[in-house]
Image 1: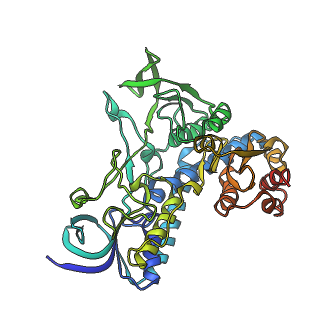
Image 2: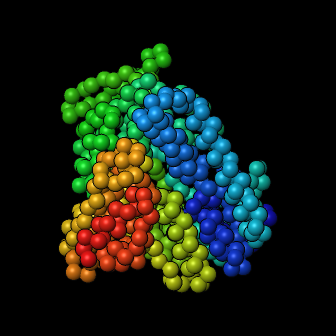
Image 3: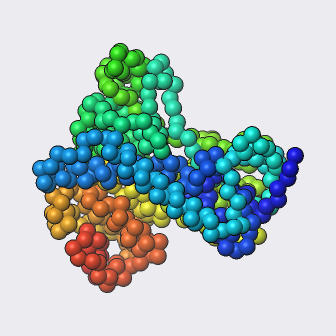
Length: 457
């Protein structure tokens, strides 16, 4: 069997992979990167955040034009899919151009399985060979989780809606969504805006359980333009002609809903390379690879970045993790760079959207930090008024005494954009005075950030 030698083997080609490959290549390292999709971008580009947010933006255009201009165009979902795939193609080609600039990055459409701590078996279009490496980054991501119950085969997932080449072309009249996380809520918001009758089955009495519940309680009444069923466990799905009958237990009572489509949105499972369990790498109880803040596993020259480590399942977090791993590899696997998960912003692209970063009210209480809060109601904001989207607020949290910003949240218009400015302030521990001295562009919702800060100086 042929053997290839490389400095770094990277398994995966998404946000936790290719930024590290390019960083290492610039420093003279030879890199072999493998991924079965054969394109850069990972799940995010192929079936996740890029396609879903492309469709989401188009739906927002439809919703705004209908509300503000009394226009009624954009009900053909095939248009959304065509544009979504055009964006994906643009980005695939963009990544190909980037890749061509690094001759010492060898990208293979292939799979990799570990033979030992310094060697992997590569399978590529019927050909097999080994790669020996000095360092390895595992960035294999996750796959969609599926519940097992009678009729579960009739359910689709977000992959079926958003993946490249999706055959999902029609807006359903009625949908049942199983789940209570951000993917479930985003899909519910999208199709509700398009006029679908949406039922959301929530297994417990809590949605978005990893989000500050004070924020969730404030936002959910505006977001939930669909029917919420709490303490609801799905029992069975049966097919009756072109419709699906969904039986579920809600607070101890059996119920039934008929719908066109049933979507399972119950999270994602780690996708580990074959052979990883035999290396002695620690795997946590949920099946994710355990890492330190340096992204190193229990084998110091093997790293795990992106969703496969279960720390922060977001593309931008994976990119930062990739850079941390690359910097520590360049330092000879010595810890010189660390990731701060607390200061990674999170956005939930519902209608209206939610975003947050850092220490907010509930987390401050948990760690015993005394905070000072400042709030800017979006009903007073000029941009919110322009779009007649006046719901929500910007809220900043400062450490009492030092008045350094420690966190913030936004519920309402432009939340996914605004959180970046707040996140930069949090990561640099800016004071209220420093934030107040910055002149945010007018007329934008960013003005609310400096306006809050001015109240404290």
